[in-house]
Structures are given as structure tokens and as C-alpha cells.
Amino acid sequence: MTTNILVTGGAGYIGTHTCIALIESGHTVVVADNLSNSKRESIEKIKRITNKEFPFYEIDISNKQAVETIFKNHRIDGVIHFAGLKAVGESVEKPSMYYENNLVSTLVLANSCLKFGINRFVFSSSATVYGENEVPFVETMDLLPSTNPYGETKAMCERILTDIAKANPSFSVSLLRYFNPIGAHESGLIGEVPNGIPNNLMPYITQVAKGMREYLSIFGNDYPTIDGTGVRDYIHVMDLAEGHVAAINFVTEGVHIYNLGTGQGTSVLQLVKAFEEANGVTIRYEIVDRRPGDIASCYANVYKARRELCWIAKRDVVTMCKDAWRFEKNYQHQVV
Ligand SMILES: NC(=O)c1ccc[n+]([C@@H]2O[C@H](COP(=O)([O-])OP(=O)(O)OC[C@H]3O[C@@H](n4cnc5c(N)ncnc54)[C@H](O)[C@@H]3O)[C@@H](O)[C@H]2O)c1
Image (cartoon, rainbow, N blue to C red; front, side):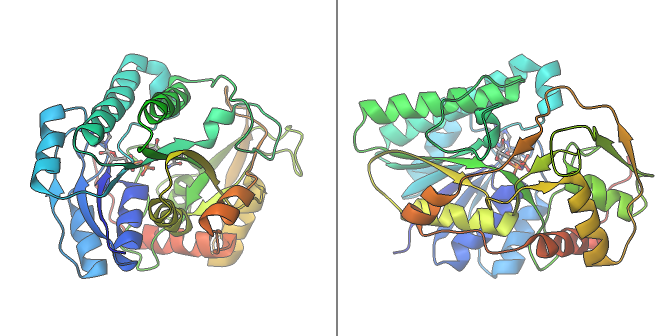
């Protein structure tokens, strides 16, 4: 069934890929983004890839009036709420900015949904809410405190949405806990564009491969993992995008929590090697001290999403590396 989905943060990394997956599976989208961490050109690229037009609103989701205007102008069947600030280090330096942006936008959006009778809400959460639980992380685990304000905003938004759903039985909320999205759309037109020095591993690797950075710093090689470097569950961003389509299609009342990962852990060194082999390039790296707040291993138990959403990540690490590199090679970084 075709549904019209409001995608907040739809100009960003995961949002753009999800718009493509939604449109390709027959849904229509309305996109809203304040472009604080993205560019208008990514909207044009979605249109180019899908060959479909859709409305775009350059608004802040914390602005109640602006959000309500969208609900007045369009019949919206559900929302996927990506809009949020996501840089862990910046959240430690500017906690109030993170709490205000991430919490207020979620509250405004959820309240507007209730007011306009929109009952499907999908929220971008993160594996960071598990803290230092034992791997693999399962949805039933108690959440542990995060080491940074960003992670706290995700845990708080989960609680806010859970309480709202409890008080409003027809409201359906999916809390999607992402593991580590990497890669890019196979067209090479859209991908991850970090602002300044990348916080995440893959954009760092691709920028070293491109010659923009001299070497990759690997934070610690004395973790209790296969080779001492940190282990993460990397998931192709298009698989993650398809997970959102599955979640929006699965409408049942109440709160549903899903891990979106592959269930496979890959170490930093393993990812570097996979990238080199997949793309025939060499990545210079140096081992430096551990980074405060990093955990040794993080990977998902993925059975719940498989069972209930009939969704499973299909693309392997080699594909992730090839797609990330294809995008980076095509992308012209702005010189600041
Ligand atoms: N990328 C990851 O590794 C990762 C992992 C777990 C969770 N998440 C979450 O997924 C969501 C999307 O992440 P992403 O990687 O695509 O990030 P992104 O920064 O590329 O996209 C987020 C988008 O939201 C917009 N935005 C931010 N605040 C806004 C506001 N108040 N109003 C309107 N627009 C606003 C930004 O301009 C940006 O386009 C975020 O909520 C993030 O916390 C991301």
C-alpha cells in the first residue's frame, strides 16, 4: 500500500538513502530538513536517482508552526524522524545544544503527530544506548548510561516516545537502534559527507585513500578483541534504509524496538584490510591511544527484526567498501 511519509532530516546521510528506498518501494515522501548538516543538492540527487518529484521544506523540526504547516498541507501517513545532531565529541562540548535540538524536535514532532492523528512514528535511535552491555546487544537488555550527551538524548527520546505511546494506544512507535552505517548508494551520487575532520571510521579511510589526510589514527590496539582494535557491526546504509521501509510497513500499535545491524563484528584493522583489498588502494595508519568513551565491541543480535519485520541486511563488507570509495572518488569536497 502506498503511504505518504514525512522524512525529517531527509537531506542527511541516512535520510537521503531512506528516501530512495521508500520511493523505490512505492511510497511517496515529504522531506523536511534545516540543512544544518547537509546540503540542498542532496535533495536534487534523490530526485535524479529516483526520477520522482517530492516536496522539500527547509525548516527546523523544533518549530511547531512549521511542522504543523506540513501536516496541514499534506496528508501524511507516518513519519520517520532522522533530524538530529549526531557528533559525539561535539555533544560533550555543547551539551545544551544537543539536548535542546534532539529533545525539542522529537517532542514537537510527536505532539504534532498526535494533534493531526498520525499514528506511525519511526525514530532513529542508536546502539550507543546499550552502553557497555555484553555483546551481542539484544533489545530486551536494560540500557546503561551513555558516556556522552548525544547518547543520552537518544535514550531520553526513546523514553519520551515510549511514554507517549503508552498514553495513546493507537500510536505506533518503532525505535530503530542503528549499529554502524557505512557505504553509499551504488550510483555514487550520495553518501556520507562529514563536516570537517570525520568522526567515523569509513569517511576517514576514504579521505586517506583520496590523499586528503595523511594517515588514519587507530584508537587503541589493546582491546580484548580479535586483533586488539575496536569491533563494530558495520551495516550498508542501503540495508539500513530498507530496514526503515520494513518498519514503516509494519504497523501495529505500541512500542517496538529493533536492532538494525548485520550481527557480525568487524575490527578496525579488518575493515582497513577489506577496504584495501576491495579497492586496490593502501591505507596508511598509526596506532594511537584509546579514545575516551569508546567500547571494545559492539554488535547486534538481529533476530527480532528478522522475525517481525522480515528484514535482514544483505550487503557484505566488500560491497560497503566499494560503494564508499565510489562515492568518495566522485565527490568534490569544498575547500574552506
Ligand atoms: N550515522 C550514524 O552512524 C548514526 C548511528 C546511529 C544513529 N544515528 C542517527 O540517525 C539520524 C540520521 O543520522 P545521519 O548519519 O543521517 O546524520 P546527518 O547529520 O547526515 O543527518 C541528519 C539531518 O538532520 C538535519 N537536522 C538536524 N537537526 C535538525 C532540526 N532541528 N530540524 C531539521 N533538520 C535537522 C541535518 O541538517 C541533517 O541533514 C540522526 O538522528 C542520528 O543521530 C546515526
